[in-house]
Length: 208
Ligand SMILES: [Fe+2]
Ligand SMILES: [Fe+2]
Image (cartoon, rainbow, N blue to C red; front, side):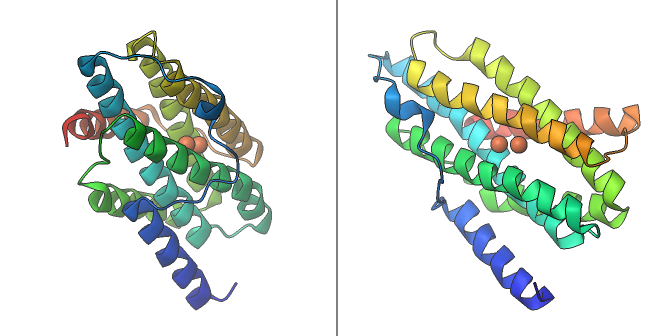
């Protein structure tokens, strides 16, 4: 694709990610699960956790976008296309679930998107192996984070849990894909810095 076309496609994707009008290729895992009768506080908690997850998916859009802009190796690019498409499903599913719960997406989504895109492009500038390393570590941290949410969500909120569980198993596949494509291993301090950044993001996004 010509760089200008790529930029236009990227801009379109950014707008959709931030404006919350994503297109899902697969039906939401919530569709086959009946709605539970949640107490108001439980609904609010679930909605806030899904807002955090939705921000994570906005960031994933930006990271995969950054990867697509900077990837040199055609096979790495093609290999990650499927993962990027699945991230669009996650974005749509989590946005839909927030709406069902009566919540709203993060007001800071444009900021999250821009920050993640900058990080993705910076990692990409170091070359494909580091680009993939950054993606693999992000996917690993997101997977762990979603596992934590399965503990934190109300036990009766099976509809939200179905979405989180499906996302978690996709993120594990994405990580394996990035590793299979030749991801390097990030140094510990970088991993720790990423954990810190994600803790800031999740704490803020739970509220705003
Ligand atoms: Fe995702
Ligand atoms: Fe992922």
